[in-house]
Length: 112
Length: 122
Image (cartoon, rainbow over all chains, first blue to last red; front, side, top):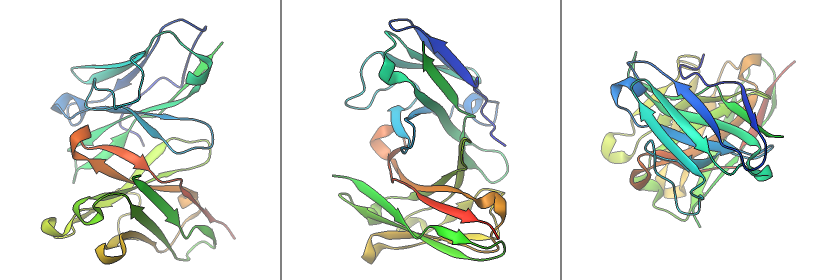
């Protein structure tokens, strides 16, 4: 049902860099709507990680960065740490039908 | 501290109704839209709907999967938003979160409540 597609899982060793893609369409990311990213630790509520494509809220380390191009966006995590093991979701707005917020399918990051 | 707290979840039979509450503190509730998002066990996040503020006529919008069955309302005097869920189906079983879009964060959602579990089962 999600209109934003993410890889189900990505993994990396401590210290490595991983990226998560978020693929949309011309009615959401491609229509210049902002992309936001959330991290969800097991058993907890999602927490804002990146807003408006490439901005970090106060308190989020600069190991996390976002980018957007065309109908896709990406989240990069550098210097991977054990505490980064979590689920990550992208989010945007979709103007099709009556318009709605949309989330990505989610990506599980595993630290090897 | 900006905080949102959901309540009202529980076990309900298919076809039944349930009303969730989302109580806010630490910010101007009347000046903020409120969104509801749900997450089935082991699944991803699904946007449910939102209610805007008084100056936007408390306009509501819903996901296709709940339109006609769910209603969002708010009581600004109580700093509380509600999600009335009618004709519940087993596929509505999920943790329900409320959250708010933040202007200076590009209308991203921050913070989120801790969630309340709704189980639809006979």
